[in-house]
Length: 395
Image (cartoon, one colour):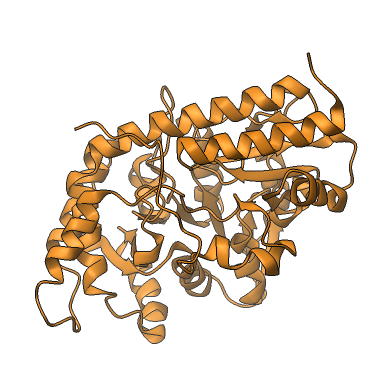
């Protein structure tokens, strides 16, 4: 079966976060929201069919996550990413950020240092600060072509005996990197030498564009498995964030016990019965849908890039993964506040301000292009109109 993404269901009035918060975040309802990382694309029909089928049973009570759900996820990870996880090593979580917070508490204490590689998804450093740990900022390096890499020398120079945990974003949000094996091996070597645990946020792992591939950090070596907490799930891949179900994989017995000590104290329980069936069906039947989705998303990225290139004041960071465009707007000659106002007031678009991802995000904006063909056309018309007024006709 082939899937198309020409249009999608209207989300306004559905209590969707990105629409409901427009007035609060942007000061107006008159923007198309392209910020929070869920898709304005319908959740796959086979997932919704599984939920409808479950609702034929009249009792929706407490249930355990069925073994078959994690078996489906384990098979998916083997088929899609070549990594073998045992089902007994999977732990339910309602979100990656919640799992990250547990890991911070489990593998460090107040006053310890946690490595964060900016620009990065804001909860990375926010979670560290809220836990009263010190953020050890290890900014990514960027070349003249907007290509980002790890700064290993900077990392080594900053580590001390209080450095206990590294929060790895892989693939990286917002810069769109699918890290190469040799890059990850450099990080691994540093962490092994300094006895640092790695929390690998791999929630975007399925959204990688050929010829790039996602390399699970735990798959690098036996030693990598022993220090890695892997966070994965269906939320981004299949637009299922509202089901609030992801998983954590911990293969080291001691690390698992330390994680579960905090996890069980918080009482995560086992989530929603409807989430269980949706989760399993997505992994069991989702491969064809995902392949069509990635083709569609990359087409949207190319359309966005073409408009930006036409006017020459916004450079689009090359993308290898995710559906989040990282826009270098320094060519517009605007300060960060003015840049945000340009997108809201002139382009009528609600983006994430680059500064929210750390200081190195200054002069950048993040745009979510995971939308239907029709919606993408609207977004590009608004953006091009605003750029034309500001820059003049590019012809």
